[in-house]
Amino acid sequence: MRRIISPSMLSADFGHLDRDSRMVDASAAEWIHIDVMDGVFVPNISFGFPVLRAIRRASEKLLDVHLMIVEPEKYIERFARDGAGIITVHYEAVGDLGACLDLMRAAGVRTGVSLRPATPVSVLEPWLPRLDMVLVMSVEPGFGGQSFIPGSLDKIHELRAMIDTRGLDTLIEVDGGISSTNARTLFDAGANVLVAGAAVFGAPDPTAEIEKILKA
Ligand code: DX5
Ligand code: ZN
Image (cartoon, rainbow, N blue to C red; front, side):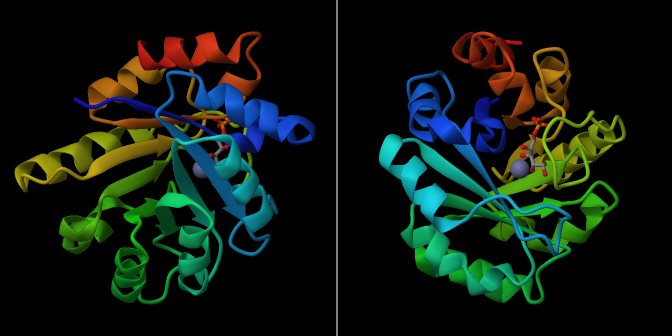
């Protein structure tokens, strides 16, 4: 099964954003995770377009943009233009999911939908054929450095079964509280893409930590 690490720039040192982006660019991570928060959908505000463009300039890797914002459909085109390769919107934040997915396709980005810990995976059943990725939140969205919610594991298993029974190739991404200690369990449960913020940027050697999570 395909394994991808997507380090979350939310935990990077913004005083050295270029350095940290280049570190990820040169590492074994295939993607770079970009957390956009609006202070409405989640009780925190992170960053937007100028930061995304700065990371784009520093790296060739796929930019995996996780939108924790209300009315994400208003901004799909701009995030695509500024460098996103895949855009993930929250199921709970979007009004017309079908229209939003159409906008992503038209903008030439891959499609992702995320679920908060309390949202069951069954809500995505009708949408799976149109999704390149499902993002299972394993913490309440809003902040880095939280502990992994154990119940998320059942959601990964359930989603893996839904995807495989339908013969689809939708990727499963997991985000929140991931480190080299639980990565193996998550990959074994059927996850393809693991996001890691605090574990990577809090490590003495972030490059080595990325490899450790990838090979867990
Ligand atoms: C939280 C964000 C995550 C966060 C993960 O709302 O979506 O991407 O950066 O951080 P860690 O890996 O520190 O839990
Ligand atoms: Zn995220």
